[in-house]
Amino acid sequence: MKTKNIVLLASGSGSNVENIVRYFQDRPDIVISAVLTNNKDAKVLERCDRLSISGLYFNRMSFYDTDCLLDILEAFNPDLIVLAGFLWKIPEKIIRAFPDRIINIHPALLPKYAGKGMYGNKVHRAVKANGDAETGITIHYVNENYDEGAIIHQAKTKIAAEDSVERIVEKIHGLEYEHFPKVIEKLLASPSR
Image (cartoon, rainbow, N blue to C red; front, side, top):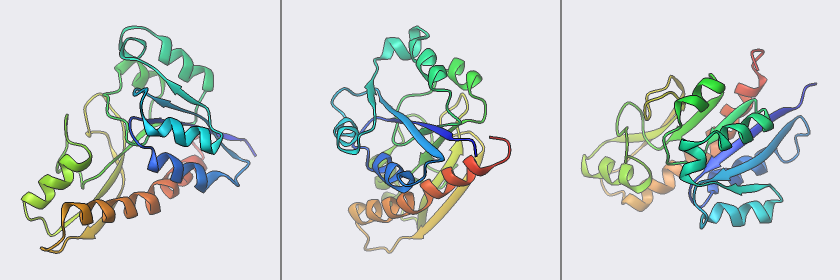
Protein backbone atom coordinates (compact mmCIF):
# COMPACT_ATOMS: atom_id res chain seq x y z
CA MET A 1 0.00 0.00 0.00
CA LYS A 2 1.35 3.40 -1.00
CA THR A 3 2.03 5.78 1.89
CA LYS A 4 -0.04 8.98 1.66
CA ASN A 5 1.61 12.23 2.56
CA ILE A 6 -0.02 15.30 4.17
CA VAL A 7 1.35 18.80 4.72
CA LEU A 8 -0.59 21.02 7.11
CA LEU A 9 -0.68 24.83 7.09
CA ALA A 10 -1.80 26.76 10.16
CA SER A 11 -1.63 30.32 11.49
CA GLY A 12 -2.79 30.00 15.09
CA SER A 13 -3.03 27.67 18.04
CA GLY A 14 -3.18 24.49 15.96
CA SER A 15 -5.96 22.63 17.76
CA ASN A 16 -7.15 21.18 14.43
CA VAL A 17 -3.54 20.28 13.57
CA GLU A 18 -3.18 18.36 16.82
CA ASN A 19 -6.51 16.61 16.27
CA ILE A 20 -5.46 15.53 12.76
CA VAL A 21 -2.02 14.37 13.93
CA ARG A 22 -3.56 12.31 16.73
CA TYR A 23 -6.20 10.83 14.39
CA PHE A 24 -3.52 9.49 12.03
CA GLN A 25 -0.77 8.68 14.56
CA ASP A 26 -1.36 4.91 14.41
CA ARG A 27 -1.67 4.83 10.62
CA PRO A 28 1.66 3.87 9.03
CA ASP A 29 0.09 4.41 5.60
CA ILE A 30 -0.51 8.13 6.27
CA VAL A 31 2.38 10.46 7.09
CA ILE A 32 2.19 14.08 8.17
CA SER A 33 5.41 15.41 6.68
CA ALA A 34 5.34 18.88 8.19
CA VAL A 35 3.31 21.72 9.59
CA LEU A 36 4.03 25.08 7.96
CA THR A 37 3.06 28.38 9.58
CA ASN A 38 3.16 32.03 8.58
CA ASN A 39 3.23 33.13 12.24
CA LYS A 40 6.52 32.72 14.08
CA ASP A 41 4.69 33.11 17.41
CA ALA A 42 1.95 30.60 16.58
CA LYS A 43 1.13 28.12 19.33
CA VAL A 44 0.98 25.45 16.62
CA LEU A 45 4.80 25.36 16.70
CA GLU A 46 4.70 24.37 20.39
CA ARG A 47 2.22 21.64 19.51
CA CYS A 48 4.57 20.42 16.76
CA ASP A 49 7.40 20.07 19.29
CA ARG A 50 5.15 18.17 21.67
CA LEU A 51 3.84 15.91 18.89
CA SER A 52 7.28 15.33 17.31
CA ILE A 53 6.16 16.82 13.98
CA SER A 54 8.38 19.11 11.91
CA GLY A 55 7.20 22.70 12.19
CA LEU A 56 8.45 25.34 9.78
CA TYR A 57 7.88 29.10 9.83
CA PHE A 58 7.85 31.07 6.58
CA ASN A 59 7.42 34.77 5.88
CA ARG A 60 5.31 36.69 3.39
CA MET A 61 8.15 37.09 0.88
CA SER A 62 8.86 33.35 0.70
CA PHE A 63 5.15 32.71 0.16
CA TYR A 64 4.20 35.38 -2.37
CA ASP A 65 7.34 36.88 -3.92
CA THR A 66 9.60 33.88 -4.45
CA ASP A 67 9.23 30.17 -5.18
CA CYS A 68 10.76 29.24 -1.83
CA LEU A 69 7.61 27.81 -0.26
CA LEU A 70 6.46 26.26 -3.52
CA ASP A 71 9.83 24.47 -3.75
CA ILE A 72 9.45 23.22 -0.17
CA LEU A 73 5.94 21.93 -0.86
CA GLU A 74 7.06 20.23 -4.07
CA ALA A 75 9.91 18.55 -2.17
CA PHE A 76 7.39 17.06 0.27
CA ASN A 77 5.28 15.86 -2.70
CA PRO A 78 2.04 15.88 -0.67
CA ASP A 79 -1.03 13.93 -1.67
CA LEU A 80 -2.97 16.60 0.23
CA ILE A 81 -2.21 20.08 1.55
CA VAL A 82 -4.55 20.81 4.44
CA LEU A 83 -5.26 24.35 5.61
CA ALA A 84 -6.15 24.05 9.29
CA GLY A 85 -6.73 27.60 10.43
CA PHE A 86 -4.45 29.18 7.84
CA LEU A 87 -5.35 32.80 7.11
CA TRP A 88 -3.41 33.86 4.02
CA LYS A 89 -4.75 33.55 0.50
CA ILE A 90 -2.95 30.77 -1.39
CA PRO A 91 -1.00 32.09 -4.42
CA GLU A 92 -2.14 30.90 -7.83
CA LYS A 93 1.24 29.30 -8.55
CA ILE A 94 0.75 26.93 -5.59
CA ILE A 95 -2.86 26.20 -6.57
CA ARG A 96 -1.69 25.38 -10.12
CA ALA A 97 1.09 23.12 -8.80
CA PHE A 98 -1.33 21.11 -6.63
CA PRO A 99 -4.68 20.96 -8.45
CA ASP A 100 -7.47 19.50 -6.30
CA ARG A 101 -4.89 18.71 -3.60
CA ILE A 102 -5.40 21.76 -1.33
CA ILE A 103 -8.34 21.77 1.09
CA ASN A 104 -9.54 24.22 3.71
CA ILE A 105 -11.96 24.17 6.61
CA HIS A 106 -14.23 27.18 7.09
CA PRO A 107 -16.19 27.73 10.34
CA ALA A 108 -19.52 28.47 8.64
CA LEU A 109 -21.89 27.00 6.08
CA LEU A 110 -20.53 28.43 2.86
CA PRO A 111 -21.44 30.46 0.92
CA LYS A 112 -22.51 32.31 4.09
CA TYR A 113 -19.93 34.33 6.03
CA ALA A 114 -17.22 33.93 3.41
CA GLY A 115 -14.40 36.00 2.04
CA LYS A 116 -11.40 37.99 3.17
CA GLY A 117 -11.44 38.74 6.87
CA MET A 118 -14.16 36.20 7.68
CA TYR A 119 -12.49 33.72 10.01
CA GLY A 120 -12.67 32.47 13.58
CA ASN A 121 -14.65 34.57 16.04
CA LYS A 122 -15.49 37.15 13.37
CA VAL A 123 -17.64 34.49 11.73
CA HIS A 124 -19.20 33.33 15.00
CA ARG A 125 -20.03 36.90 16.09
CA ALA A 126 -21.72 37.52 12.72
CA VAL A 127 -23.72 34.29 13.03
CA LYS A 128 -24.87 35.32 16.52
CA ALA A 129 -25.64 38.93 15.49
CA ASN A 130 -27.79 37.70 12.61
CA GLY A 131 -29.76 35.36 14.86
CA ASP A 132 -29.10 32.30 12.68
CA ALA A 133 -30.85 29.11 13.82
CA GLU A 134 -27.97 26.95 12.61
CA THR A 135 -24.33 27.16 11.63
CA GLY A 136 -21.65 24.64 10.81
CA ILE A 137 -18.44 23.90 8.99
CA THR A 138 -17.51 23.63 5.35
CA ILE A 139 -14.56 21.64 4.04
CA HIS A 140 -13.75 22.72 0.50
CA TYR A 141 -11.11 22.70 -2.19
CA VAL A 142 -9.01 25.85 -2.42
CA ASN A 143 -9.09 27.94 -5.58
CA GLU A 144 -7.86 31.45 -6.37
CA ASN A 145 -10.73 33.12 -4.43
CA TYR A 146 -11.33 33.06 -0.68
CA ASP A 147 -13.85 30.35 0.29
CA GLU A 148 -15.10 29.75 -3.26
CA GLY A 149 -13.62 26.32 -4.04
CA ALA A 150 -15.85 23.31 -4.60
CA ILE A 151 -17.51 22.10 -1.40
CA ILE A 152 -16.44 18.62 -0.25
CA HIS A 153 -18.39 18.31 3.01
CA GLN A 154 -20.63 20.34 5.31
CA ALA A 155 -21.81 19.58 8.84
CA LYS A 156 -24.45 21.57 10.73
CA THR A 157 -25.34 22.37 14.30
CA LYS A 158 -28.38 24.11 15.77
CA ILE A 159 -27.97 27.41 17.59
CA ALA A 160 -30.22 28.26 20.51
CA ALA A 161 -31.14 31.93 20.98
CA GLU A 162 -29.35 31.91 24.33
CA ASP A 163 -26.10 30.43 22.92
CA SER A 164 -23.18 32.79 23.49
CA VAL A 165 -20.44 33.27 20.91
CA GLU A 166 -18.26 31.06 23.13
CA ARG A 167 -20.88 28.30 23.01
CA ILE A 168 -21.06 28.60 19.22
CA VAL A 169 -17.26 28.27 19.10
CA GLU A 170 -17.48 25.07 21.18
CA LYS A 171 -20.08 23.60 18.84
CA ILE A 172 -17.99 24.46 15.75
CA HIS A 173 -14.82 23.00 17.27
CA GLY A 174 -16.75 19.81 18.01
CA LEU A 175 -17.79 19.55 14.35
CA GLU A 176 -14.26 20.32 13.15
CA TYR A 177 -12.66 17.68 15.37
CA GLU A 178 -15.24 15.06 14.38
CA HIS A 179 -15.40 15.63 10.63
CA PHE A 180 -12.11 17.11 9.37
CA PRO A 181 -9.87 14.03 9.90
CA LYS A 182 -12.54 11.70 8.48
CA VAL A 183 -12.89 13.82 5.32
CA ILE A 184 -9.09 13.89 4.91
CA GLU A 185 -9.01 10.09 5.33
CA LYS A 186 -11.75 9.65 2.72
CA LEU A 187 -9.99 11.94 0.24
CA LEU A 188 -6.70 10.08 0.70
CA ALA A 189 -8.48 6.77 0.09
CA SER A 190 -9.79 8.01 -3.27
CA PRO A 191 -8.38 6.07 -6.24
CA SER A 192 -7.38 9.39 -7.85
CA ARG A 193 -4.81 10.10 -5.10
